[in-house]
Image (tube, rainbow, N blue to C red; front, side, top):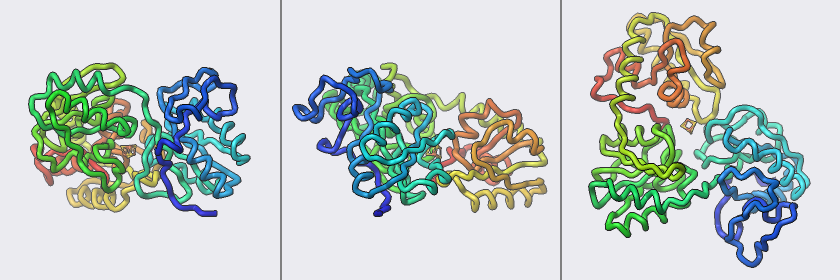
Length: 370
Ligand code: SF4
């Protein structure tokens, strides 16, 4: 079979929403309006607020002749996987196996399952351009409308030319956001895709490359949560306004509280003599060379450093190993987002450089994965 890596596309002709052609009785006729969203009137599919591009994948499975298909989804989409598995099975005749392990991103392909199956469907993330070749990344598109929240945000933007960024769930509606800004006399600028970023204007928790080098003085981040806009603010040093389509709220990012917490973590780690350098097994998070460099840096300062290789980084796993502090070379969110869960300070590699005096505090940067 052709095992070329692929991300399921989104052309209107191939797009298929759940409830349509899904094997359930349905009062919508997709042939009359192929772009019409399914209203889930069958009530069989959990309405998670996303549209998933299934049609092309089913066609690909049928064309490839895959007999075994793996299905992996982040926690927010997992409830949909049993029905999705059944639909794929019905439509293609393939056996479908769901990955039950946690899934945090496209970096986190279930390698063991990918070896068991002919084709693996990874839902909810865009491909990073790495990983097993039999994986299809099936993006999930949030149905939230961006118009109202971007209009609201335009009221607190201070300049007439702004960088615009968002996460994978909303990239398909960025043109709507740019038009809403234009209607208010504001030019929205998207940074180019590249590296592990697939779409212009997209950011990942571990990559803000699309926001760098834009000739703008402020940014509009469209999405939920503080992590990504904090990353943009630190990557660019510019003002960041957040427009959250889920809540309709608009706010401005303040990096101070986060920087204070991180300074506190670095200060607490200063007492540690025995430090673990965490290396992730996940294919898109594994940075063994960086971990070796960090270990050597610490040892050169007389610290006891040891490499620890693990899959999911959780507090219990670090308890018995006896480290007094840790440096995580895995997903940057482990140290920056989950720090409160751990009894010992966990630093990012740039923070460890600050601790050792190799980097000045004023040169603080978010950890990013190239
Ligand atoms: Fe997301 Fe972290 Fe993976 Fe980057 S490393 S894609 S931020 S889960």
